[in-house]
Image 1: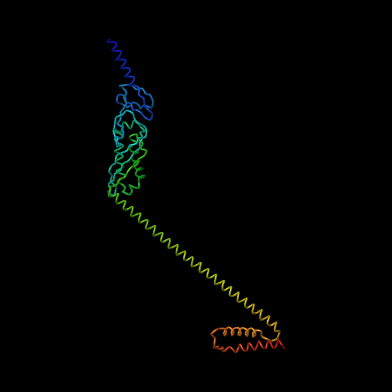
Image 2 (image 1 turned 180 degrees about the vertical axis):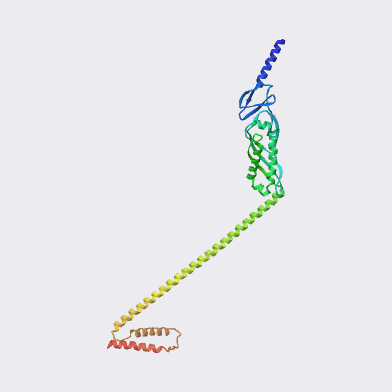
Length: 328
């Protein structure tokens, strides 16, 4: 019986020894193996065999996040022998920072990092997640301390770039690559937010008044230019109208003169008297027409003959002479 028990114990020890020597490493994970307390090797993905008791995986502290029933984020740290090589996201709680203009504000950040050298992440730093968190918080305070509140609210890309640069330089010693740093929320004090809202409303009102004034100015300019163009067009129209009227009157006078000349010529031919003046005939006719208009009024009782009336008589006499000469 004693021999059977010994064989069973030996078999159990062999099974335990063999099971402890098999290490399965999943994709995107690795293990750091120490042999008698000294770094030996880093296990690749797949099945690996180590010497139990002599070889031992080095455990590290890692940060884990989970949510409770109310949605609150609970952060815990546990020891693990497996090192995750995937990109990891850490969300840090809100912290108070002071800007260069002495305004306290709350900021929380998210950092995306990835372990590129597992050996350094194990031996160069004792608690990698805690070190990254503290470095991010102190770097964030330094960066925000160089900016005033307005720059902090409007320069997120600049802050993110500075944080990533500083954290990446420090993380190289730890075998960590910082890919991105993002600011989630920037919450100034309530009184500062109220003052900023009033300032923004004042700025919007100012811009609205400026735009309204610019619109009124542009409208007045356009109206004056329109009135100017209208006056110019009216003046041009009146000018052309006057020119056309003058040209029409000149043309009418020319035609009238031509008609009178033709009439005189015809009268001269009709009379056929040598040395006679047909103008006397025309003048006499016009005087007679004028006298007829003078006496054609209803209330005309007294007629005053002008001094030049003798010209009428002479014209009439001229007509008589012309007719007499024609008869002879």
